[in-house]
Length: 273
Ligand SMILES: Nc1ncnc2c1ncn2[C@@H]1O[C@H](COP(=O)(O)OP(=O)(O)OP(=O)(O)O)[C@@H](O)[C@H]1O
Image 1 (cartoon, rainbow, N blue to C red):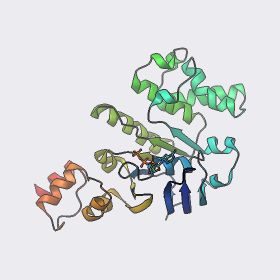
Image 2: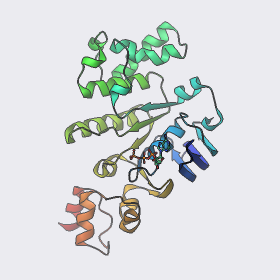
Image 3: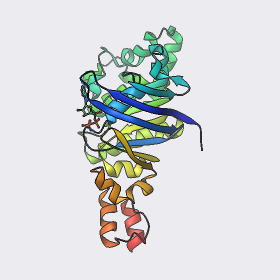
Image 4: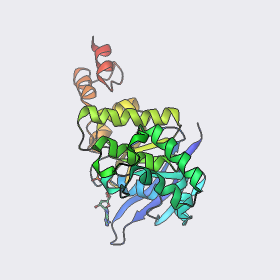
């Protein structure tokens, strides 16, 4: 087993109104992995990601990210240097008047000096595909795709070990979704960031995640590779999760599963050609 970036032990969380959103979660994520967190609405994905990010504190149990105990009230500076959270809608994240200031905001805020900030801004912009010619533009006037890249650059300028991305493809068409996911995959491969994605898009999960965690009513229903998870239609049905279309077609044609797990169209063609 590889090194862990996240280790969650006996985690339970209840909101102040008494709603128990998570109960007795035990989970670890490998460093350098792309993990997808899936499950029907209200199963606890966002709550879990906010706990990993340190925005919420566990009712009981512990969470360690990159060696940092985020459940015990560690300093905000340590949290933001270790974990980046990219919101579903980039407009909830962007508030500075220029692209440069947006990307520089977090490193300045944790007290880094001018030259260090400048080199981090340029590095984050380059990795995120944000041209320096846009530095003096207002983020609000950019296209949605570019706004999302600026939002990611503003996280990368802190060089976090773990990036949590909440529904990165919501409201985007297929080609835009693939562009975002290719970008995140490139980031994972070149910069080595561990990535945790919350999503409802099973084709995306099958194509990009190295591991899937399926949640049901505040608990982990199962976890494994896409092939392992999508070859359990019984458990998926229990969690109200619909596998990718290619998987459903394969399962209809081969209910015994003798031809092995199919998670995408290439697999479907090679299994039934
Ligand atoms: N601020 C809150 N106060 C009380 N209960 C909450 C609060 N936020 C979420 N919940 C409840 O906690 C549970 C988990 O919600 P959560 O938003 O984590 O689910 P989710 O899987 O992210 O859902 P979705 O896919 O719809 O975003 C649900 O029962 C929800 O109603």
